[in-house]
Amino acid sequence: METFEGNLVRLDPIDSDSESELINSWFEDGEFFRLLDERLAKIPTVENTKEFIEKINKEGFIFGIHSRKDLTLIGFVGLGIINFYASEAWVGIAIGDRGNQGRGYGTDAMNVIIRFAFLELNLNRISLDVFEYKNWGIRSYEKVGFKLEGRERESIYRDGKWWDTLYMGILRKDWEEKRIAVN
Image 1 (tube, rainbow, N blue to C red):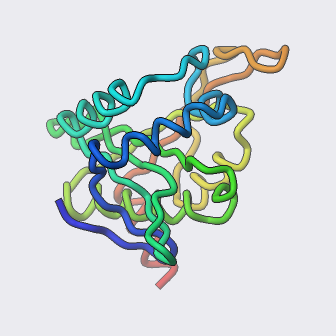
Image 2: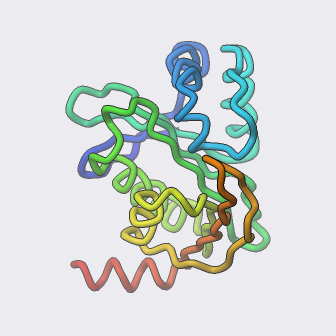
Image 3: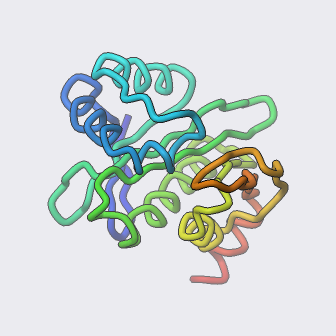
């Protein structure tokens, strides 16, 4: 698998042997896990993290997000549940270290993975889900071109309140129109 670059990040295949320990350390931050998944935070072992990476690579693609500035691993992004018959996939992303959150890395990485999905894999549709309280994530996805397609009402309980899970998607034709408009 090759490397893909954006303005701020470079996506490289994750080496599950050398990078699993760092990725696993992010799960020790309860807030990281809380934002990533609706399940109760249960810190995985390094072996669980390796299995997670290898499973996604068997079903799809997972890349490490590296800062172009110093090539530090700062997160991961993956395309999973790829259905080549329907020409669609699900995308997930996480920026591990809080110091790197809110700096545009996630939006840039999402732009790169979407470009990969549409141009390299010839997919037509990419979907994701996001918790309603992740306003910054929703704004980032909208910048890339994702549109709200639906919601699962009161599906997650956090901070003493029920929140919706939002479902968003982007079609290749919408992405191409946005790309032409920018250039």
